[in-house]
Length: 270
Image (tube, rainbow, N blue to C red; front, side, top):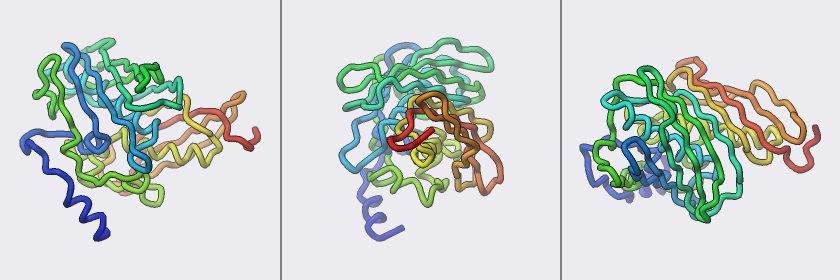
């Protein structure tokens, strides 16, 4: 770590509570969680300042994962819910201002919990919709027990990494190293951060922006670093489809399968 970055980390505010288990990646995005019902949540991901934070896609995925996860965990308590797959449809990639991701339950059972999420931007425009499937297991409540109905919880004070462009903070030569900044409370790679590796891969594959995205988690990332490996690229009409997987290089295994699609970049032929 450079001296400048070490100083930036040292300057971050100390968490107001040390006994509350939180998500350091969600904290880096500045997520604010508002419990809007018995098993529903609205998660605000603030707009990124110029040159700071994640892209619209990265912010959408993060907000969707948190909103669906909060709704699912509230619905299956005292059990816990972990993300199994995310299907995201981007309706407008030119989202403006803060993103508000509203997660509600579709069905909560003994083994699975399905939530849907609608994403609005600062203009109140619906810019994305998603469905998220969760596996139900013995859980860690994290900060959820702190949120009363109609109450809120601000993750930002628990940020561990300095702000800056997401690729500069978390991506190193096309990989994400697993450490206290990039893992969840269980010590596993935070899935919504790991999948941000698909965005530069999509740009390299000639996709202008991501309209449709699917990730299916099949194993936890435990060792790292994690890398995106492209499997294939195919055209379908005016759009292009990228297929690939995330690999935990240290554990030598695939941790999730991904597909991403969007319009071809200008000048890219079919």
